[in-house]
Length: 229
Image (cartoon, rainbow, N blue to C red; front, side, top):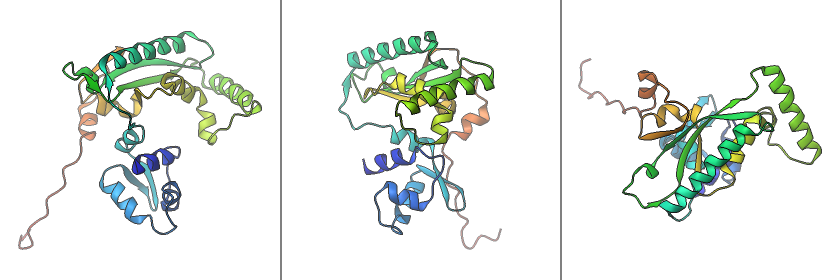
């Protein structure tokens, strides 16, 4: 839970440094390096430059995990139906500037022998409804300005710039503890590598090298000390 909450705080940033990690984990300055090494060894974060780090896909999944009690299959099926209704609402309502192009179900719900589930794992692909980028930016800016006047607080520039996209995600999630929502664009190489079901949109062909890249790399073996080459 400590690691999950720490990653949740960091997920609002594209990249971060050791000092930011220490603040997110409520650690004393200069004491966070062991935690950073542990997160890196676990594959939850990775270095993106000298002194800068980012959360990996595995870290993102952990940050969105819940500690809720298992749910019944009937509860999961009800949550899924409600989710798909929200998808239809997004695609029909002109107020939303994004549309849901794909919905993929994966995870334990696909196993019919499992009655008690942790959550409903879904990935969605959200695309802009407006093809003209300048027009999309202008419409998005007007919505952001209206929200600022109403007192809404944004996390930063990117939160405002991509409000059209984040708004759709927040509406689809609707604070449901049952729905675990992933970004299809970021996770597709992993999702296509596990059992899944397309609920909306067509199956996408993933290049074999992309699927291989999503697999954990085997740790290279060391040469014996007396090896002559």
